[in-house]
Image (spheres, rainbow, N blue to C red):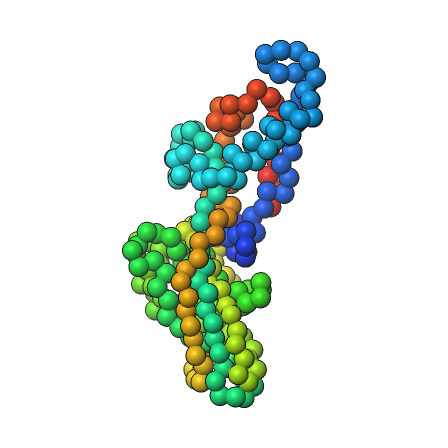
Length: 230
């Protein structure tokens, strides 16, 4: 059953968040006796953090396979397209529906799973809906029309961000939007931007790994525990 996760701005699909990374490094190394210094603890914690949040891992799509990866990484791509809309009639509009067409994945690299598409304004999600979709493979969107609603004052410029990713585990939005034609708006679509974020699929795969499998990829001499919360 897919996770019911909001697809968040800045750090992701969704606000999946590593709530706490507790490193419990116990009394002794495997090579020699003696208390571990605070400096050693900090160094290992930092290295483990870089391992998890510094790359996609090796292989980059390791979460799709049953074998233990060479290197665990939790990063994936989050994409966004900036859209600037300007009211041109010179009158206040109130809540208005905007419609435009977007090319999400012209080369069909499977980077836009249709349930991940969201529209944000000033960091808040606005009601939106895809229609007239064309697909690359399965539910990976190639291009689509999209509608979203917002309030407009006379001659107002507004910037929206259309977010999307290839993460299949992001639940679709539970709202719908009826289309009502709007006119006297100009719409500018800017080039796609790429943002790193935490992968839901990789988090789920990490949960399923045995402790010994994680230790093998980390190469740690210490005992440690990783706590993942949502």
